[in-house]
Length: 324
Ligand code: ATP
Ligand code: MG
Image 1 (spheres, helix red, strand yellow):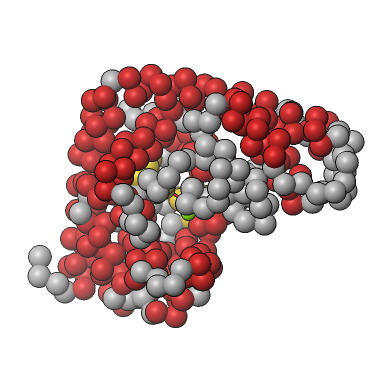
Image 2 (cartoon, rainbow, N blue to C red):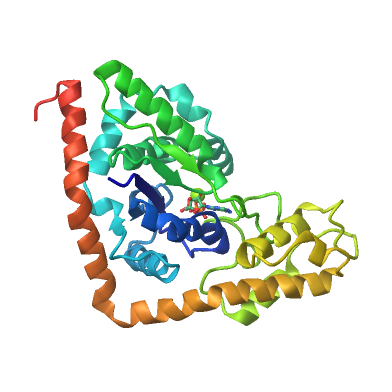
């Protein structure tokens, strides 16, 4: 039997090259070696307000981008989190074994809480729901970007705590990070992670950006006062652009760009990104041409994984002694 992988993306905005290089690209590469479940985690997205009329479109758009980025819906299950009720129910069971102190320590919670006057409980509970997403499928491996490593450690802590209180129920999931591109930084501020829900128009390159927009954004990306690329002494902006270029095009090396003036270097980066995104954009057009196709993929994914989720939830409830 193949080991299982689970991972997800929030339909919280435009998917960007950070999501692609940190997660989707890796998913597409490893999906055939595993039994793969890829999830549009809409219950996570609503931890910050989403306009209802836009959310359902974003869910379908995210699913279409999974396929456009190379996820094969015949081979892998593509599912929407809110269509599988056991995610939310298991999250409650796990909430009851999670000390508050573990959640207050999460870097992402601290960063998000700092930016808001009032912080929704969902922002604090988010990692418990994420633990439920993963443990529900007894996932062996979780391919994510580096920003999710801490949440994965917490998932293992929660699983261990549940198992020690109620007996062996959950599998310990491993984290899988891509070799290059595990943490893409914002173009406008290379000290901040590129994020769907942050920054202005120069912050991120969306997967569906046209070549002109990509050239402009990379042309305006923050660098440093040096005139040319010095591999021995790269500021965070140049290092980030080099990572993006290398993750998009394996033939880009430090040696090749050493001494390049920033203007020329940025052109090289932009062309590497444009070439990498072109087939994804082409495929996106195809998969969205038939309006029913995405819904049929999501229904199919749901019917494949719901029995697994229901089975695990039942085991967990039985272990606790709840009435089933
Ligand atoms: P949001 O701002 O709404 O949290 P996000 O851009 O952080 O959006 P998520 O949906 O939270 O995206 O994460 C989806 C996947 O993309 C996760 O595996 C995450 O680790 C990965 N990821 C997100 N941002 C980056 C990034 N800048 N570099 C590499 N991987 C990333
Ligand atoms: Mg995120």
